[in-house]
Length: 385
Image (tube, rainbow, N blue to C red; front, side):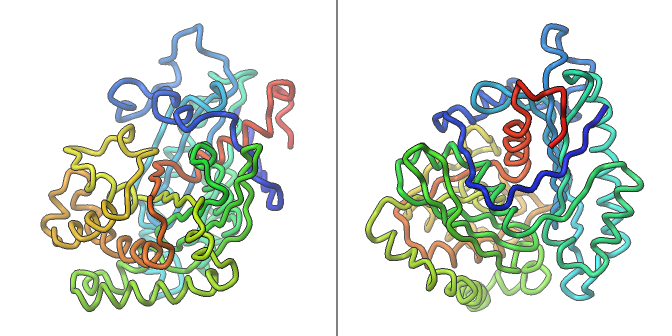
């Protein structure tokens, strides 16, 4: 049985787990050696002694990807049992037409059907036969005129409780997922950014003495790697075009800086910058000279400004062919890399923190942390919020 949950606490501080950053790294996620099998762990494949635990699932339908995560509480965090990700390019053509295309919706529906099937297979393994789940959609469905219609159709076909979340909650979930990293940084403030497919969220966070990050302010700008790749991907391969995109994105960020005076806080010290997106993790892979992408080497890594600058330059020098051959990128992501770099470069230039903390985690992890907190051990079995 799958219990569907709509849970949107928009005005409460994000509660961090009482843990060091290491407690949410891959070894504590419980990933098998070498990562998950290509098809995830089958529902019947767990040892009998480990079955019938409280299970939680989060599904994130974004502008470019559809992702699912299934986990069970473990210490102050959770252990990953199953993970799924597929490029669906739901926002393809949205900038030009204002609507989700039939082809893009079909790709997304196919991925969502896989998520629904996995949820059904995990249900019998859960405590009381119940898998508590949340499924969200973000910028593409927020912007598209036919977004609500598409989600209604997706709910009917798959049975998933898909809902469109606000930009504020998107920022909150990103903070939630990175709470342990933020708390381990020893800073008074944190500036977190998430470069998505259709938008980029910036969160300005207060780190309280009790290690409970609190959202001070946020901004969502309507540019992401998919929207920029459709508007100016080729331009990003030229010096003038790239610089123009960086300048334009910077202009979108300046009103947020004017309100919160983040630059002044950075100059006074004790401000931590955290980046959570494919762009940032890719740049970290480039900077660390990885022969293949390894989450364990990326999540929680710290890059100096010099390392960031060098990685940005290297990504641009690689060109289209070099990017397609890079082991941390690949041909299917070439068009997104430099638009993402341009967005990041604008953030990096405006807010000049001495270091960047890289987070390979996002909305799925944030959803799982919230669901587990909303269903503590004493309440599991009721499953109503």
